[in-house]
Amino acid sequence: MTKPSVGRVTIRDVAAAAGVSVTTVSDALNNKGKLREETRERIRQTANALGYRPSRVAQAFRHGRTGTIALVLPHRDVSGNEYDMIGLDYYMTIASGSARAAFSEGYALMLTPRISTEDEWRLIGPDGVVLCDPAASDPRIDMLEGMGIPVVSIERDPERPERPFYVSGDNEQNMRDLLDHLHQGGARRIALLSARSSWAWTLEGEDAYQSWCTERELRPLVAHVSVDRLEADSYRAACALLDADEPPDALIASAEQYSEGVTRACRERGVRIPDDVMLAIGIDNRFAQQSDPPITAIDLRPADQAGAAVGMLLKRLGGQQVDRPAVVPSQLRVRASTTRR
Image (cartoon, rainbow, N blue to C red; front, side):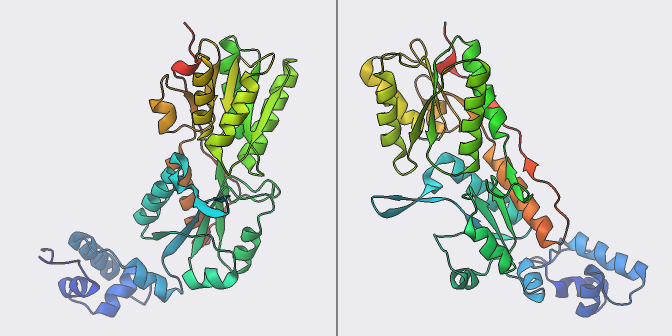
């Protein structure tokens, strides 16, 4: 048996090679019709030998679906202008990882603009949605689920503890790992630059920080930083901390671009990293890896988070039960910014 020499193998090619009708091939591959098992198996073997892959689009239309998954990333406003967070390494990896995971299962990934109405969602008509960083009591979850569009989130909705349809890291443990590492290196005045938001990873990380400080009878030093102007606001917050009468001997920048503002503030003041202040970041990224010195960070493994989220969504689309969230283990990447000689 030889494969067709040109183009994609079609169901007609399988039918011709197996000596049966197109309808019989369709019934055999979809477990339909009243075929003898040996006939069904022979057709499947023929299809496999030819390299036949059914069209996901055709299957989707037969089942009233579009074969697409929508990915919704957070948006923020800068001076009144919409700004997509796709420019941040974490979200860029989420997007590429989601696309690969969806494509491997025959789905197309759609990166959505900021949309908020049912009419807009009906216009694009995704089969399901992967929602990154939902806000507390995020109204999009209720709206989409009410429309019959299942939602899986990367990070949980902080106000829906009973909802199992999410993927995340262990945010509290990640913060404790950073704090323990800095403490073991001699730090006793550890400041936290925390995002001013209702995202779960922010709230859980800050709660873990406060608890950790209380357990060791250390004074917490928290600076809340806007998510609108990541580098500029983190720079101002770092300046205030470094100029205090008792400046910190270690800083944790919770969000991706905060470390850029912190390193600038240190450089302008002649504060040496790590000799004068150790620096760590809660989300690994290229700046952390390529900085001088390279910055210790938590690798959240966003590609794995994306793959797990798409996998969970496809389970829901297939009618499978999802009883619990998926936790993707993170990894502490120790680098020179916290290694004192």
